Length: 175
Image (cartoon, rainbow, N blue to C red; front, top):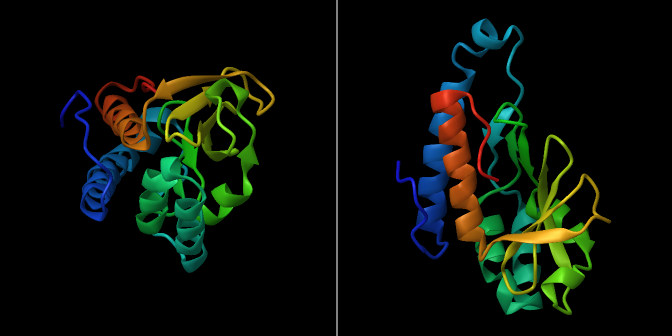
C-alpha cells in the first residue's frame, strides 16, 4: 500500500485495482469483528454498477467535462458501503447520485454539483463541475462546503488509505 497520492487518471483498470485492494481490506475488517467490538459487522462492500448506473455515467459525461472521472467511476463501480470503517462511508450509485444534486456556490461553477456520498455522521461529499471533491462542514447539504481534493482519484485514494488505516489501527480515516 502506498501512503501518498500519485496523480493517476481514473480508468477501468485503475478502478478495478482500487476495488480489489479495498475489497480485500474490507474483508480483513470483518474477520474477528464481532469478537473485537462485541457486535456483528454491517455491510462493507463495493457493488458493481447496474445498467441505470452506467446510463447515469453517460449523462454525467455529457453534462460537464469536470464530470469525466465521475462518469468513468460510475461506469465501473456501483454503490459503496463501508459501514464499519471509522465513522462509516457510503458512496451512492450512479443512478442515485445523478438525482442528488446541489448548488455549490463555494465551487463557483454553474453546473450543480453531484452528491456522491456521506459518512456515518451525515457529512456529505460532492463533486463540483470542475471535478474537485467537496465536503460539508456539518451534517447538512445546506452547510458550507470545503474543497478536500482536486479530483475524484485523489478522493478515492484518501478513502483507500482510510480503510487501510482502520484495518491496521482501528483509527478513523482521512476523509
